[in-house]
Length: 162
Image (cartoon, rainbow, N blue to C red; front, side):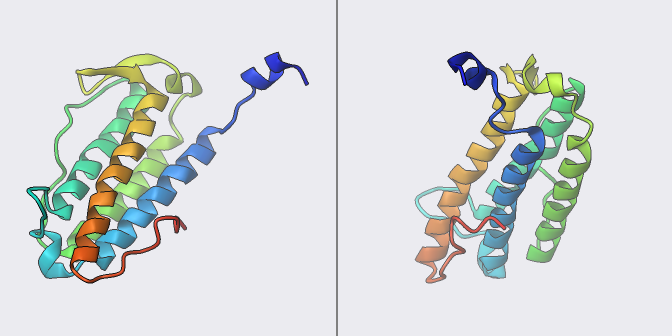
């Protein structure tokens, strides 16, 4: 096989990318479940935001971001609806998961590589935004590992994305 054919071969397809992202989202869901109800919305260390606020950030960019990638119509990014119970937060998470799966199927293949401006301010491609959504979630989920450990709670294994 020539170097040319290796460099032009797809390494991952869109369904594999969605599965990878949803694996991360599944682990984040396990982190939400692991939090005590009385700490999820208030616990913080060193001035970092409570985990619920981080989850609102993930929710605020995921579905609007996938819609933007699919359609080229980027609605202004904003935090997700605020709720006051873990059950309600998990319900929002599950709703977003279903919406991501539904919208994903409508993304034209060219939109992954197409240059655009997300939320009216960040230039990039569809794939670069998806990588950002994943990276941002991993980064902030790391904060939640610190929170849980400081509360004496063993967090879910970071590699368990099933």
